Length: 251
View 1: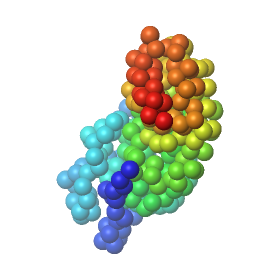
View 2: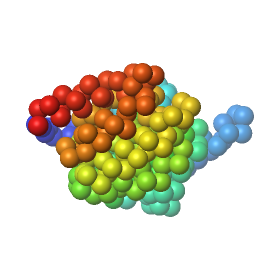
View 3: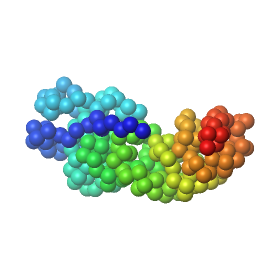
View 4: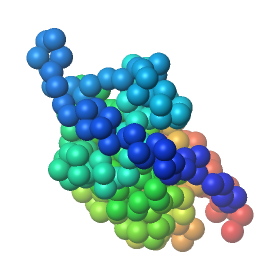
């Protein structure tokens, strides 16, 4: 697969010089008029934001339009700087998950991990995913910061611990991770066998083809067998079976 350079570059010296006081203010939670803990907002036309000479963060799943400038500011800081302001990476992720406007912190941290090629920060975000209260849109650029074998091992842990079949985050991450190891493939097959018959399970809710495309070649026949009970009731199972049979025929 052809690889492209990530779309984010480290902050310039000029940006880094004006960032600290702005980061101090924006990562200090306050309260809304209704008493709800929240992160402060900044507008894209605010002089402090204009001085950074950066673009607003892309508007993606779960990110309110009013928070895109906030996410952009946070993303210019290094993961270590964000962690220092919040107490730790885990505290930053918890704040992003808990506070109003917190999605800007989660997405800002994801972009920061990508911008500074920080595998520890990227791994922390992935490991936090089962706790996320929003449908987080993972960046494949960030996931590529993690060494593939390491990501495979992390996803093996998450899939093994997948207690809530309605939690889509683990399934979304599996879709992103290409070429599952044999052990991860076996664990995913087992998860489908356990959770496939449960109501509104994320296995069938997320319209992707990772189960068919990422499955280890040695387990294609087992994967097809695991899908059999669901091919008449679940469009995903029917589609994946077709794709898996094509892969099996091509081998």
